[in-house]
Amino acid sequence: MMPGWARSRFLPIWIATLLLFLVSAIVAPGTTTESSLQGMVPFAAILAVAAAGQTLVIQQRGLDLSLPGMISLSTVLMTKIPAGDNDKLLLALVITILAAVVAGAVNGVVVTRLGITPLVATLGVNALLVGTVLYLTSGTSTMASPAALSSFALARTLGIPNTALIAIVLLAVIALVIRFTIPGRRFVAVGANPIAAHAAGIPVARYLMATYIVAAITYALAGLLLTGFLGIPGPLPGDNYLLPSIAAVVLGGTSLAGGAGSVVATGVGALFLTQLGLVVRALGAPQSVQLILQGVIIAVGMGLRLVPWQRVRASLRPGRGSTPSDAPPVPPSIGTRPASEGGSP
View 1 (cartoon, one colour):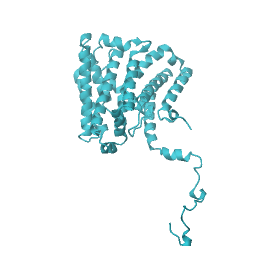
View 2: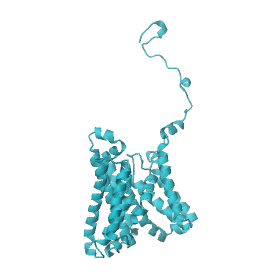
View 3: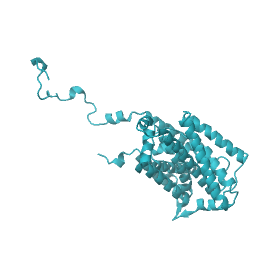
View 4: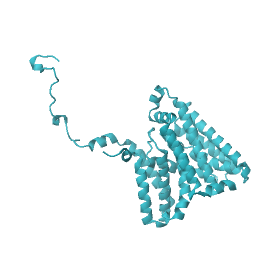
């Protein structure tokens, strides 16, 4: 009998990531040097932060297509409001978080109150966010990040990039809340079976609303870190994060059918994708190969939902070929007589 951790659906991504780094050291040694890893980890951390919010939405049987717009709006607000003035950085942060709360609330209202599917609802909100970005920037590049934000995003603490520390803390907090608190368990119950959760008295609509708001805040935080790390992030940097965020969730083992999920495993999936992209570029392959790999990962992950795993496991058990005729005869119950003797139970 295997231990519980060995049967976890989230274990494969840990093994795959370890194998990827071992293979990387052989086929592309330059990608595993200290300097290379120090440059790769911040991008993996930013993706992990964004993918954490996507994980929460997918656990609620949704898919958040407003992620690119929220990340892009965050980068614009964090550069345009301060305009290089560190004293206005806190104001920019507050406005960015408020914008994320509004965007998430709109997503939640449209999904829960109007009954529009998450795919369509979040796509519409993303269009509003992108339109706002284009209005604020006139389609040109954003301004430079405030010096204080860039210094923080580029700095290291105990040799670990600050972006990675932020990602680790965020993922740990979300994981602990979901696993060890009553709201967290109710959150999982709503995603697994909203009808049963409603029958049990859980306010399903409130949990869905909170999910979209928290997810939007994580996207804004990802945009904030991206702004500081890049300095001048460009007008629509969020477009590069939608497909990878979904792929990271799928790689992490979160069920696209809702319920079970792990933001920590998603974070490892983000690390896997970022390192894989680094190896692909080191081998001279074009970016198109990277996109193809991400698309294949998502397609395979969605296809695995259709596999009858219970039947597969049952067929692999010992004695799977037995039939009722192979079973030993069942003796008559105590106190009964055969029907031929005219008895009755």
